[in-house]
Length: 292
Image (cartoon, rainbow, N blue to C red; front, side, top):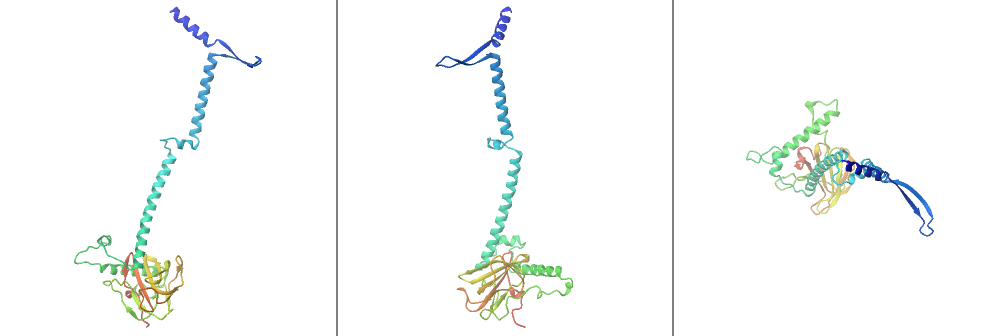
C-alpha cells in the first residue's frame, strides 16, 4: 500500500517537475531564448491544440461546400435536388416522346406514308373486327373537327344560333377549281388535286402556325399549317411560298402561289391534304372547291 502511494507521488512529482528548454546559438553558444515547461503543460497544450484543430476541421466541413466531397455524405438539399432532377428528367422524356410522335406524324404527312395499325385502333377505341374497319376513323375525326370549329365559332360569336351553324363561315377553301383527282384511301391518295392557273393565290383554311415551309424533291414547295383542335393542313406543288416556318397566319391569308413543282406534279394544281392526329381526312367533306 505504501509502495503504491509512493509511486503515485513520484508520478505526480514528475508530471509537475519543471524543465528548462534553452535555445543556444550553435556557433557562439550564446543563449537566445529559454522556456520553462512541465510535462503536464506539454500534455495540456497538445490536448488543447488537437481539440482546436479537430473543431476547426469539423466547422469548416459542416458549414462549407466541402461536405459535398465527402464520400457517402447525403444532405437534405442534395436529396431535394435529386428528386427535382428526377421529375425534370421524367418530364423531358415525356416531352421528347411526344415530339417524336409529332415529328413522325408530320413526316408521314410529307411523304404521304400512313398505315393503320391495330395498336392505333385500340387507342382510338376501335377493334379490327368484321363489323368495324379503318374507314370509320376518318369519319370520327371529321365529326370531332367539325364540333371543335363549331364550338370555337360559337364562343366568340354572340349572335350565333346553334340550330343554324354551318361549316362555311368557319373554314376558308384554299383555292377553287376543278378536281383532277379526288381523295382515295385505297390508292393512298390522301388529298384532293385542284386544277389551277399558274401563280393562283393559295390561302390558309383557318388560323394557325406554319410548322413546315420547305422544298422537297417529290412535291416541290410544301407548306404545312398547324391549326387548333390538333389538325394539319398541307399544301404541295406550289410555285412559291409567302410564309416561313414559325409564322402565324389567319384564315383566308395568302400563304403560297399555285405551281407545277416537284417530280410528282403533272401540271399546275394544288395538292391539298387535311390530317388530324395522324389520320387523313377527306377535304371534300369540308370544302366546296367549285365556283358557285
